Image (cartoon, rainbow, N blue to C red):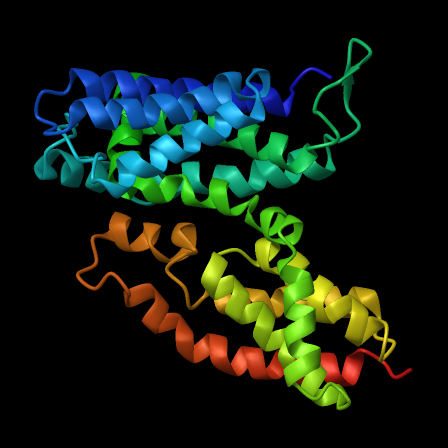
Length: 319
């Protein structure tokens, strides 16, 4: 294979390392040393993480959490364009500004469908195991090139904007990475078994409808707590989904999993722990209310959760 996912991990690590260097050199950043250390540690996870013992990577993440928790990641000076320059560029470009954003989904779709079996010199063009992610990486690179060409900016200016954005988001950039393994940790710690014990001991599971409500609401609540539906699924599936909905009531596993994850996404709409959805937009748009996105989504999330409960009840099948 010619283009591998690992190449984009290395590229991301290099960009984080560049952010660390720029933070270190930024004398206008009141905590430039701790900010630089934070991004340097995160860069190391992508650049050499596979070569480090897992315990070392765990220590790195703990140190990063301590730096962020103590307010060690702060904003600096970024050398961005003046508002007048931005307005002039926007008037000149008009709707062409949307081209880089549109390149990302279009090229990702083309790579995932039309280019999946393309060979060059006997080698596959794209890594098939992670085809969509590799296509997304290629699309992002092309979008950056298109943005530089349209705006007549240099890649250096692009790196300044990259650093400004990651500094603005701050520690929330790392949160999805940490939440990705949280479900596995909960499962290994026996949280799923504890949930099964509590639900069967204190809730009457003789009613199929009650079991469905517990599963769907539990998926939403655990997602609110952990910020990630994939982290919530092994807990609720191991505690209620598999032993009760499938084992006791004969639910279709595919239906249980699909609607269960949809219920988890209802929780995603209502939690600041889902930082990439609910915190990052607030920061980037500079909204005065940090919970504005969540407040706007709750009226959608709650009715959708109720709809999921009834969908699972009627579609799961009867034993």
